[in-house]
Length: 125
Length: 237
Image (cartoon, rainbow over all chains, first blue to last red; front, side, top):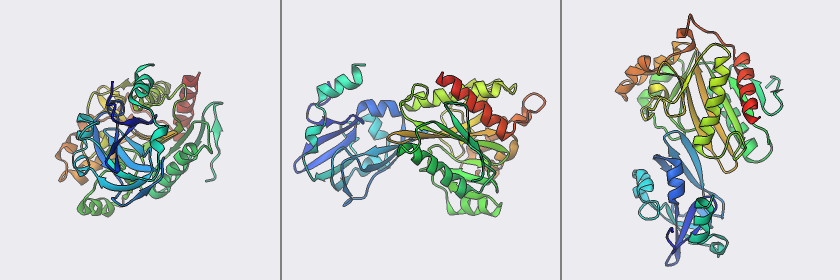
């Protein structure tokens, strides 16, 4: 079972409430499927994002992937540690491999999956 | 663009006249976006060459001002690809771009599935010209030049890389680039970037090209495009 303190999107991002912010990252499934991450490009602090907007790009040894935010809001913090050391996302995607913190603009979390539903989606097939 | 779109039934394809780096990458970005945004629903293959020869950088790849000047002084355009990976010097080669919706029965959705499906079609297409290739070099391409190492899904002959490839995956579509080496022109990248990456000096021993295979094999962009499109079509079943 993946962490139950957060919600999950079908695109393999997670969102964890943290005070008045939401922390966003990618799941272990996404990190494993992507392989070794070598570069991350994330939005600037202060960027205003709507749900589904680009959250930047992530590059592995052989592919560039788009990242999308499952919730809208203003970016209040970017994890500079993963920008400097992208391998941290592979090492601990649910922990210190988080990507950004947003101050959310709504309650889109209700539309996301809980851990059990996400587990069933990625491990059930 | 003045060139005719051909079709195998399931795959549309087009061979473009050689163009400069900026135009080539603009066309590929437009192609990818047309699938990403749902304007185009079928897989599309574009085959082309570069005039003048050019250096394409991976999407996130860095280049020093000195390096950029060195390449420009040799008459090489420098451009950034929308796809990942490392630098390719496009000279005496054929480039392809495949854009298709994610999750199709032939291409799949994951990075590995996409590379596998295109690599399988490349092997089948090249075999028609007597080029018998292997898939996967087991290397980890991390240096400045794409051709310095062959990754797990890339095309090799006798352990030496013949086709380099890179991928961009969006929400609904992917774009894969690949370069088929026809001659040794790409090796100039070693002379022009050895200061920044000494590993590029091994490039000549790690790559091969069509002119070195058998007694030398010549494939036109038109014939390559038709063979690759047919191989992709057959994979689509």
